[in-house]
Image 1 (spheres, rainbow, N blue to C red):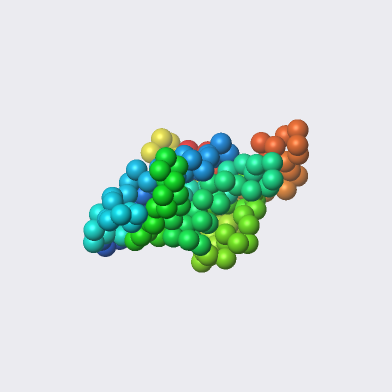
Image 2 (image 1 turned 60 degrees about the horizontal axis):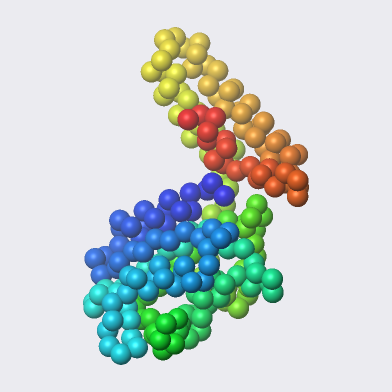
Length: 209
């Protein structure tokens, strides 16, 4: 979390793809339902012929789902929005809830973005994950964090203060802040009573904003 997954995917899919690709961005939450997911996708599809739907002819739609593993599990342990997407992987479509006719969805690609389980995020089933290819974003090392935040802090100090004595403490301030963050993330672990104790790089970045 906080490693830039969504930013990288949105930048690539939204701005750096050939014209034949049409992006569709969605975000799951704990309350997202299968019906909402189906409606959000169906509304973007054109009818090709009877029972066949897809993006405009000659286009291919990339459906990006952020926070893919956020939907809450129902009483039997399934996540209905995930099962709907899995149904497309297995059967290339789903049933229209009004006419009960099967809607075959063509020329689409699904791209999911999610963080590790924890803090409301859950494990996804293997029968869903087997359809996906994985790209992992590792957390940045201390040297990378120091370079980034020292640059941000140094730029602000140059703009607001005069004298090298202020710039001299930049690295020390960044190192101290990094150490505090690592200690907090290690010692203040989430509990059922304090589930919000899930610290990530966004919290560290707010110190320097």
